[in-house]
Length: 479
Image (cartoon, rainbow, N blue to C red):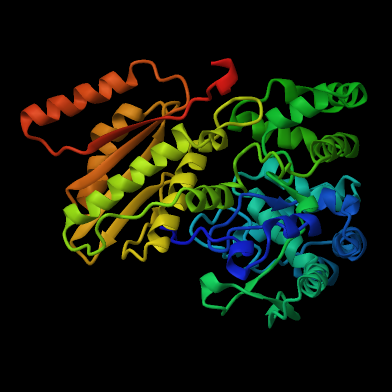
């Protein structure tokens, strides 16, 4: 299970103004938790950074043009040309970009031998029908269930590492930082040492204008949407891969793979759509999915709203519980009264993913623990995609906090069953269930109170229930 114990960002770790990184076009990533953004090769050519738009594009295209040329020259599987192409289709694990799905670490993903072989065989089919566009490899996420954006991003990162290294050297000079020498993917250069890794691994700075939430469309719905918006593409789709409009299941996905690989025109139509999907980098300023700002925003709110704990010496589980309840109360204040609730919503007013609220609580709690030198270690357990927070002193004094949004369909089960399972596994009797109202509450609060009262009457284990009103309010002048 991945555990994230530090929400510190690049700017916070190295004393850099966050806006300075923004001016330089550098991602202010969290140094111990991957950000779910990915390097999109379709965006390299339009980057304002010469390392990306120049050498990055050249390296990317040269690698795949060579693989395509060798595959075209191969007469049978296993001959010298085939072996040469397969040798170049190798993308070792990349560590240090702070991008991807690793919620509790910044270590990269790796292409296993079976995945590498399977994807290479699909590439053979594509080249065999006459496609020579180096971008053909970006369609793999549509065809292969375990080829996700993190693997594709690592593939691109490995190829353009010399360009990324040159970008890091230039940015370090702009920031007057020396960095340390590391070797990454065969490239030796100066990078920042990652404090979350004890300085043993590099922290690779990444330009913001080559990042997307996904590097390519990963499902047919996104492809359909892109094709509908463009009359020329729509006509080509109708002609070559018409069944895209009906594709919904995994079985359909496999059938569409066969259809897209049926001829050169069909596949090139698909590539045209994918390039349209990738027209714009992720909007870091508005951060619609809450992927970036949560750490700095929560840190700033906590700094501007200091919390001084009443007791400093923590020994028993109830001592820890008292501190955690103070943190929860302060978090409620920040959400309900100080404006932090705005970070729970997208620009269109729809609630962000529950993970955003969980990250905000984590960053707020961490800031208060550090500021008051309290021996509490919040941990984020991301093994199942859900996030628990464990505050502990020693072995016995453990308190859990589970954060849920009112939009979650399992609010009741989370309190009645899930949290009790967590308490048992962590060997604690103290836990807080923190429910944040962002709309669609219905009767969930009343039902939770009923569960709580039934447990109390039966003498069953009981967790504290805390409510926070995170809904958006009219401005004071309009209330």
